[in-house]
Length: 66
Length: 170
Image 1 (cartoon, each protein chain N blue to C red):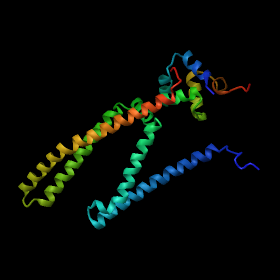
Image 2: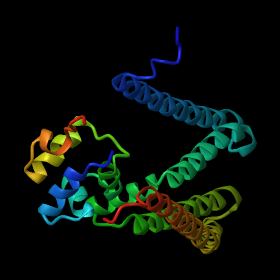
Image 3: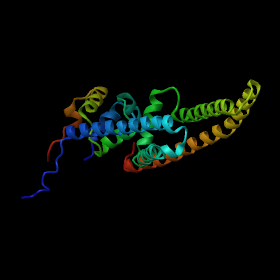
Image 4: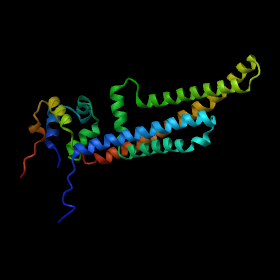
């Protein structure tokens, strides 16, 4: 499942995938795969992304069941 | 009873197992290296005695290179490296080729002077002849091999990354 919340938060901060990747110390490919829902990040990386984008874990990574 | 029902694996256990596999890999490398040094010491500097160890080094290196390119990891390695370092990965690769070529030329030059010369003047002459000839051969050869393998691995890796991120507008 795609992580659109992460994508929206990133765009809100006017960051490209490469810029966010550099800020959290991973590759553009990793950010791209997380947004596509093809890679599950570790909790440490989730927290790092949340801190960079000023969001909580829930806001970016919690998915409500339909 | 369904034996295939429980497919959930403990990621901590898998991560720890992977760490152990990595340590085993390192251990095998160290054992091979010790074996090479020991065989050179016992049998002299002959490659035929250490062929198995060399095959392990070369095959493992090539296997990693090919798999890392196929999975797009090589591009990731280059990206992470270039973000952190002043020297680009490509510059570093070419520099390694030049340095290894120089070291080989130095080794062959000293070996030639030490093994075949009868006087000091002859030793200097043999050293320079072998040194210059080795530089002319090994540096272009190593730089070419490293540059070609770098660019082909990068190209394949970039292609794998693009495929993984295909439906991404970025």
